[in-house]
Length: 317
Length: 269
Image (cartoon, each protein chain N blue to C red):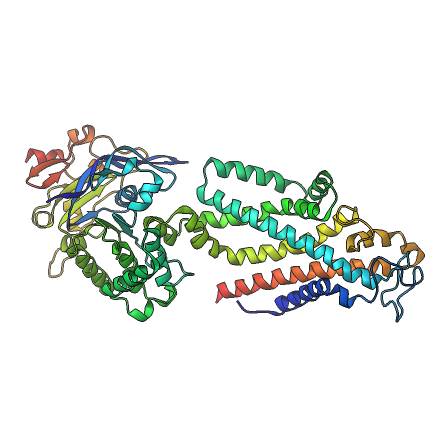
């Protein structure tokens, strides 16, 4: 098992007028070839920032402060804009949340597709063949290749976006909430499509706030909170034995069919990342927080094989 | 885009005047620079707009005068449109220190009353038709710059621009193929609005003798000359060139109104 992506001790900050926001703090993880890693977190947990940082597409106010992002042996943070263009869409690509706006409304689908391929050195004739093949592979009817985006449904648009993302056989596709804007039936189709992409050997980093979907579909699940990794484990481990109080809270906030218990919510609000709480970032909302949690920051440690947890209490188990 | 009454009338007026400029040789009954009758003849069947103080046919001068204004306005608006749009695109998309500098410069130009600035520039560059066009162009660049920059700031955060970047498309291509086409609507409106204004500015520069030199016919300059004969009762020397200036400006104003209205309707549907 070889790793496609290695992120090491990554810190990302946003410099805004209202202060400096620590969006990602000390995140370390890897993505293995051909796996789907789900990154789960609520709004503001830094999961999307992580995706944008890997693409080097952070907005102007954002900056990587520390750490390494190694894609296929190359440190992405050291690449020039020119080298980045070769990698984006080539080795790593991204699928965005809202398929309704990811295609240029003024241009035909096939034209956009071919333009992107041409930019990566594929001539017009081969570009047309590849584009048509890919659109067919993701299940977009052939007659829609010459359509304008507004003539496609949301699901079809997302399929086109995925087709473009995987056209050049990238090592990694970062899917940033690719199903959030779609209804559940289409959501399932898109997830099935991502499964197919995985079978082609492309790794997927699946960013979502839906822990149920993550556990159902991913190979490994990474739980983020306040810009930090709280827990990282294979999905079966996480489903059976989630250890971090936050993960447990997330899981019990999920409604279950057949269960008498009502889903419960986690009290409190996500932390203000301009001045994150001292100690464990989750302690203000944690039902088990101790004095130590309030003062000393826990580190992410492997409590059992391939199961990492960032919690003082779990280590004591 | 649907054609409404404003657009149709505006376009018709502009078209007639442009055709008049192009076909002046065939339309004008007399030479615009040589006497063809008595001095200060009032409108009559031979000289439908009368003659001026040198016995030249006013109608012929009006027809040929269209050339000057059309050329100056076209050059000025195209020049300012291209420069303003390109600068606005770059400034809005790249932002940072370049954006700050460009915005500062543009705001400084914008702060001047455009007519005064155009006169000053025209004097500094030297009075001829091309310099007048350049002077007018400079005063309008900020209009395009500000409109384009503002739109680019919002468009560049649209997902399809992000997607294009995520697929490795270069900045120049993203600006030209993804952002610029989104601006067409705005640019058409600003373009016709500026043209209306440019007609008046051109007339003002001519009024001060800063475009063509006599005896070349020009509406603004003829207006200036006609001013001196109004007390002698020669109203035709003033009314006809002045009316043409108003008419052309009105044509562009109607066009911009019509075009912007048809977009509003489209958005509200």
